[in-house]
Image (cartoon, rainbow over all chains, first blue to last red; front, top):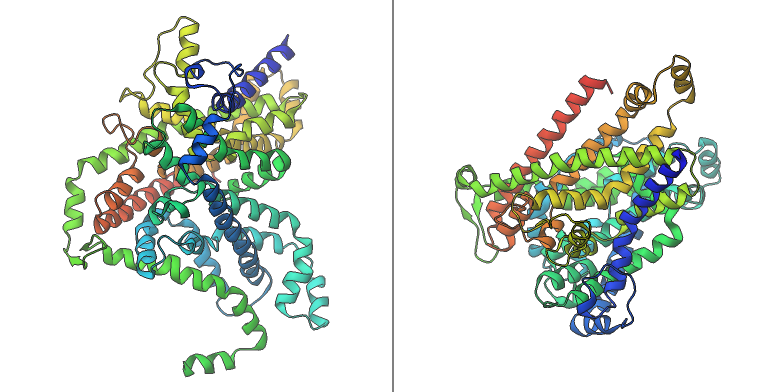
Length: 269
Length: 297
């Protein structure tokens, strides 16, 4: 009896979290008149709404834009973040502590303070409506550096010393000795950065006006509120499904990594 | 430049390597943290629409904030959101974590399903919830009416719209907190429960006197994280309600965004941004103080 209750609760939870998504995918393929039903099946399934979305907005271009922006940010944070994290964790140099405090300070200040001035900076540099405005401000992250620093502290000093004896430069030590041992933290920082960049909306709608340069969430958000979807619910749901799909695919293959990585944000508190 | 040159020459070779390694952060900090911080101080005292030259206005921006009833309303709206969202999220997350912590089959699968909304773009989730909350043919109202209950004007009634957004945000984010609580639960030593069972403590007492206190660190992390996250509430009202009905879901971030990009009041928006950030910092620091005093973390 108790078991039964337990599993009913678990299943109810699964329905609450998964059913709306399944419904969204189904509804996006239904004709407009059938969307009001809760069923997941219709005899009249068609991809018409998807064709309409593809014809109305440059959503594939937006997918490409999002990939370029998020991948650039990820590669940059992983490389530069690990460099700074390594120096902080394993090297003594004048200013080491000051730098660490600066990074903690960066993590503490609410982004609301710098949001408008950062936008103004983009305008002054002439970077609005370019990839640069989307990528440059996300090329490093204080939290990423901290994660690298924590992890690198646990690498045995003897390995570093041995490499140094062999005449390896600090860059060589980082990328040839430490990196191969640091898969978990690289994956964590990569997923965190990619997800943050991929899902960002506020910053893109500030700096990008050119439809061909918009990121995917931005384009879909504006499509949904801007009236381009008209009264067609199915169009909106099709656009939302296309937006969710790449992440759904990535998540179904690597869900363990996603969960573990995103849970590390709990360390931020 | 020669000054910098001699300085570099005097550095030990190893230090030079170190500075090269940290140089990306120095450039980044200068450009995207220090410069905007200083520039925001300048903006505080100017009127500027980005197109025409900046105009010095002294303390006018601050005087304007003092009279800006809509800004206060938007901050209070956001606080209202937090007051519903955070407790709701913690209760739901603990409940699911407790169930998942029992010996159940398919724990990994259930955890993955609950976590799923966390990874999906907030825009997609909000478009989906537009249909969940829709008045006539919305999912929730269809279910309610099917069991004989009246339909609820989820996002069209000013007094219900913000709670509705809080429920939606909870649905989207709770997965991450379930995982955090699950980790917290698994770190509680089993002998505590064994000792309590020997003393004849009821399951409820065990939960109240062992589980909850042991979860305190997790609760405090979650409170602070979701406070910071909640104060940034933007995309949900932006897509779902546009701040309406009757400005009941106008969040502070949405208001600041409108000031900057709808009305082109850059100086004023920057002023609001700075003041709002001070509000956030104060709240978070107070929370930390209370947490430190109450549970001595």
